[in-house]
Image 1 (cartoon, rainbow, N blue to C red):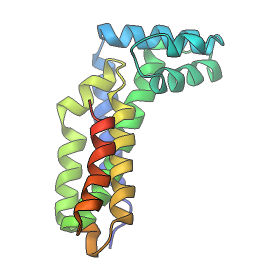
Image 2 (image 1 turned 180 degrees about the vertical axis):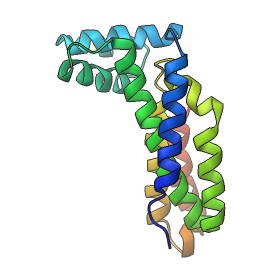
Image 3 (image 1 turned 120 degrees about the horizontal axis):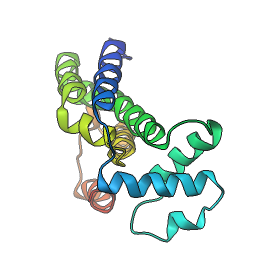
Length: 171
């Protein structure tokens, strides 16, 4: 049984890098995230919580800007968002393998790695990349702890335990 799908991770990284190289400017929301990241890198963490945008992605991008002060903020936003988005292929593969087998896992991972929607938003310096990674990792961890074979949900109580946080996290 394959536990680590290196080819899919490499494909996800390469495709996202290509889309990032072809994206010249951040989206409107991406520009706001980058401004917040620059403020965070300068030590102004209050600004992260004074807006409607979630603070995690600008904080992560701000940390990269702090570590590499000469890095262009747009490139830093693309690196953090596209990097997280590429990593999301792993929990997607693990979830699918656990529920449907290895062959389905490769197809699901390929669809995610090549999916234009999953590549475009991270290239525009949007928060979707970390969102994809955190939600897919969270779902994989929940399924690993679910009762029964392959994470089968056997009780209404357990189903609502899964659904409530998902409703809160998803937009």
